[in-house]
Image (cartoon, rainbow, N blue to C red; front, side, top):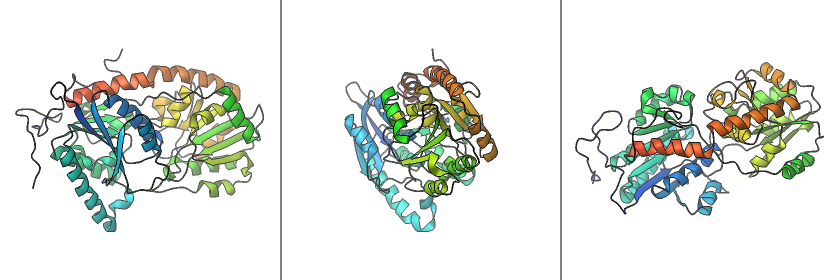
Length: 415
């Protein structure tokens, strides 16, 4: 039997269509019911953004976070971080859009998870469903069908058939937030229907003593230059380009620290094999997944982001700026929003091995130190947690009926 939907007579969504969802503002004393759908249980970029978002949402109502159980996350890092703050989370069957699930043999399983999620939403009857990434978009029409308002937070770039597929579900979203201008520009939705809000963070402090200890553990000298790359080992993150560029260097004072691990699903790169094939792998330190990334940023002189596809707004680049480190990054996606070329780091032609080799060969500790100081100033202006919270709250509140018109860009109306 179809779920009953509350209709607001005469109300219209952002796209001008008559609304079939109830207003999210509820009677005094009745907290708003907010369901958050997130596609992973790790602590990478989008996971850390989710922690910031749930803190904002919990000031507006009762928040329940739904996490997937189709992928095994042995450490359940996000679950632990949410629990430490007293936020409820549940591992459930979610129809997360993973590439492997779009094959014919995987579609029945995706359909079952879709059905179970719809039944869960019908039982919970949320006022608002917040989808933390595009991978959760299949939930949008399900949420709409039970009368919830849908807020989508886009961290990804959509291309080709992926853009057509995801665009079909976008109509069910009343409010769309993009993490950068580059992300907003490629969405199949009018620009005035997308709000750009740069991510913001409070990065845990790491002491100089901790950084010195980590450097000592690597066996590097006081005048050596340490470069850090920290991300999942997805094929598009550019580890192969970086290591091919590294292979041609003659810089015995330059060390590379590699943090991260292969993704639980999707295309990955074998970092260990690439490093083993280097002419001199002794200056490349592959340390795997770590929970002390800020300390490693402080132990480094420069942070590298060599993505070969447009990286929407990499968290690691923002964290590096917050901790006073220069960033050497590809010149695509949201990276130009973060890195001011020549002042807070440098931008390198995406996927260009020779250009990366030249940029790495030019690294100079004194220049990097000066760029890192300017990076802190840029972070304080654009990427603080307070700025993100203020801007996100304005857009969210306007989208669910708690405030006025949402700004289309994070700086609109912000003082």
